[in-house]
Each structure stands twice: as C-alpha cells, then as structure tokens.
Figure (cartoon, helix red, strand yellow):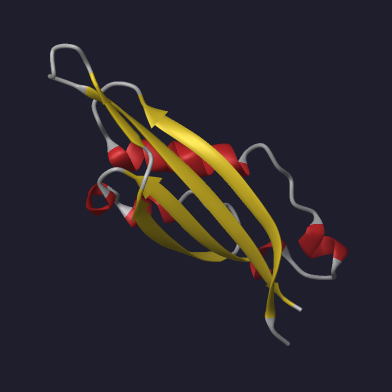
Length: 112
C-alpha cells in the first residue's frame, strides 16, 4: 500500500491587530478544515484517524510561527507542518502595529 492524496483543503487567516503570525496561521488552517466534512476515509473503509495530513503555511516571517500550535488544530489523524515565506503583512498608518494574512493548505493522504 502507499499514501495517496485524497483531498486538498485551502484556507486564509488573519491577525488584524498584533502581528501574530501563529494566530494567523492557526486561523488559516481552521478556515481550510472547518468548512469541510471529509467522509472519504470512512467511504474507503478507513478511520478518520488514519489520515496523514501535510499542512503548508505561508506567512511573511516563517520563523515566527509556532508549528506545534498549528498542528494542534488537526482534529483527526497525524500531521506535519511546513512554513514558507508568503502571505501579507500590512502596517498601520502609525507604523506601530500590523495585520498579518496567512494562507494554509492541508493535503490529506490515506494509505490505499
């Protein structure tokens, strides 16, 4: 058997004030996951916990994302998180705060 991609979920998250890259990344992954109900695992005779999820996050400063907090969002299965440079950072007019926008992709695989 081999891991096969069965779903790709995409989301966006923000931290409007505070410039928290982890908060934006967590919200992006929740956006990707919380709009879906994957039934593919049970349709194929597997458990939801059999899912292997690769999470990809894009933010302007990847080193400022706590990947453990992002991974904790996954409700089922096991996963990994990779963070890349991407997203947006928008400074306020005074230059004292910023909005962070993160993108997330969750690639779901099953051993088929």
